[in-house]
Image (cartoon, rainbow, N blue to C red; front, side, top):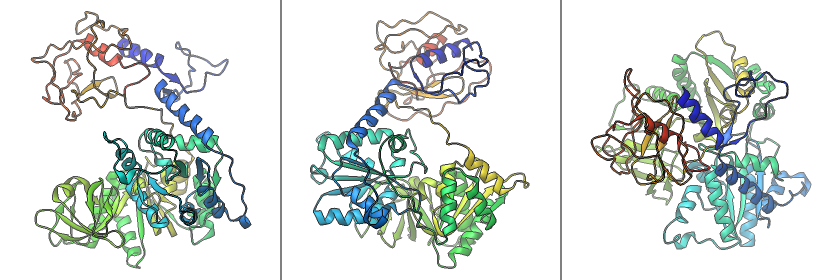
Length: 575
């Protein structure tokens, strides 16, 4: 414990504190923190992350001008379209679900086309890029594609040389990671483009480290859309806004109209499948949203069983352990260099209908708008899943006739808000209840009342992509993925045996952990990904390092473990 306490103190000393200071007069522990402080109340970040986010905020503050006042007869969408097609270097557009953000972008597209100005649409995911392209007519691609083209050693291809003054429209900006935004801002500044960020900070955040768009919207002027226009009933618009801000009034509105139901976990998949079948038979589109991939898989299997009880015909094995038959709905989960007969690329989170199953395991899939394409067997086995039910990141940005939300204990306010606002006519929530005694209204009200979980800023170390051998460094409760740089000759390690509990070793910023392995061979250098190490067995020393190439576990002294776990470059933290 003394070793881990020392490592924790060393890590905290190299970070920037984000939590509030202890109140005056509060009863404190020996470390000076209040006795009533929760374990997650203390937040830290690194100086590198702090500088990156401060730089993004400073740039946006200089590039963003005053918001345009509502005019044109009070049409907020026309005002947003005017701002998007304006001359400001950066424009922020904020609107809850269903307020017509994409419709406003469509109006801006016509204005920009009339002026003959170049424009490109971006989105964090391929599916969101498809929606943006369909609604606006712009050439829309994922953010990662644009960044990849401009990171080529010889520069981007001619098709990606965008002239100065190009309007870069980033839709669903809340899902863009901080690193992607940082790289995108660098391109915008270097090539003198305009940047327009559109989204809703209350919806799902980035999968990695994010929150910059929400910070921009909080600190800087933005164009706001507030009137909800998506739903067939006015009460759903008011209820959705209440869900967005965590107000139980919205939950009561859904409960009084019998839109909330508590279901045992063993019955959730069957209940969703029955409801999906009943709504689909009417010829309407249905979106099923879950909080976890495991629940989505169970629901997909149940829907498939009701559609094809005998599982007749040829099938192909999918990445999620299921099988696809003729007529099934599948989802591609990785961008690939394949193009449909209509020229549309195959992207992550796109949904398709299986039209043919080949003997070699390949699939021919089709979509009414994108066209048809053949997916190779190797791609199907690794990156294709059943696609009737997906997680919130697969449904954010789409609009359907009906929506079914599976609310689990892990569901967040943002996830519930996204899932309950996809359907125009009807939005239904099934709340998982193991006891059979819970009130669905109380459960949902408690779920949305929880504030968004604060995510401590993290950053992948700059040396994490080193092609040399990667290791797993094990601490008391977390596995840290490490790539130790070459040891510095000036670095020293205390001579200690397996039973030593020495504290962290003081190293210079340029030095790395001493590579003192007593295994049978020196660590080899490889690029393959390491596997998760098995738990330590009683009576044995913790096995702290494993080579990613030879898979051997060299015996390591306690001093090496302490030194390696305590070290990282100045201004960065293990992640």
